[in-house]
Length: 119
Length: 112
Image (cartoon, rainbow over all chains, first blue to last red):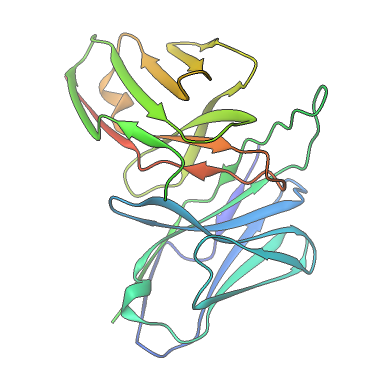
């Protein structure tokens, strides 16, 4: 069964702390994503990675960095946490798969989320 | 800005009724997907419809896609209390790397 796990369900940190959020998938997926979810704003893409050591900025990368040293693990790093980074963080992965013609079938598999509070 | 906008933002119905949620988007897409999220949890994929498809079914779910109107609808028939969740549409604009752009979601409440 497909599984994406995140290191913590709930996390409380102080302003200025360095925060690591870990995500692990066991499906041998090439692509991994970090989103944050805020009320009324839906899911917004922070960073994604399409291969080991490769990363691309999403829509809201400011204040975040990522690391992908192994295929199954994708880490989100808050270099210096701020209160406006209080949010629900969701990790997802997907297989890089080509279907018929140029269609790409890209169902994303999500972890349970980490609710981060920065005080 | 969000590619997908769901309508309504919230929907409250009784068990047994049908629930319809709509999604509008702005640019051409490769496919459109619907996801479900139970309160405080991750998202679960429900159904994917490709840009050359007009309708798709999966159990009690029916999805339509109108690319000329840039809109999609998700119909849940004979709803159950367990269907209570938030529902999101997500569009793949074929920008590469299987990126999806999610809408803001519809909160569905099904009362017994």
